[in-house]
Length: 255
Image 1 (spheres, rainbow, N blue to C red):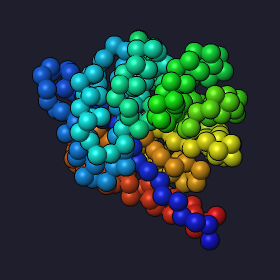
Image 2 (image 1 turned 180 degrees about the horizontal axis):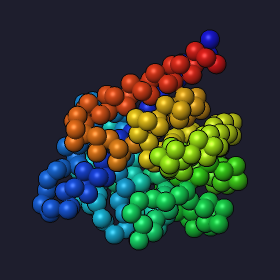
Image 3 (image 1 turned 135 degrees about the vertical axis):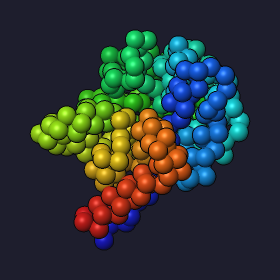
């Protein structure tokens, strides 16, 4: 029987800050959410400091870097400003994501091929500082190859298209996108890249992604924060971890 590989859960606490900022003041506190996530068994915390600071703030990043006992995954645009912040706080990992001011949420993966020169300039000092670098990309063979050529440590596959197909009830599109994710994960793992996945995952969509043995970490935020309204953050994380564990265990036993 194939070896059972643990699947990590990174909890994104951005939208605790969204709720805080809608009212102003300091509550609810994203750092407290990170602490509760740690108590509930999260393996890491993800936070995206956007250029317009629409949710997570600079102070949030400082407090997260200094006060939580879990690895911090710092999502950031590929800019010199964000590079400087990353080098100052030294998170466990930096995940470079595309960012447009007008978007509500991240709409797709990085164009690693077209942005190679700028990405190389941003990545090199971060890697030199001993920080792991991840690129958030669509599950496309050419983008995986380009990420590998840049010397990145990790790719995080964008699961948004897959989740949209599920929401639309489009089984053919769902199956096609799941196959793309499976193939990209196998390709990246074969190249020696660590494989993560995230964006839009929910109780209804997580299991097929968790069953991809090459994937070692899922980063989930908006759904968990929303579900926490009804069952609490600890309850939402516990249920998500249970689904992830069952899917990975079943995939390992069926292989």
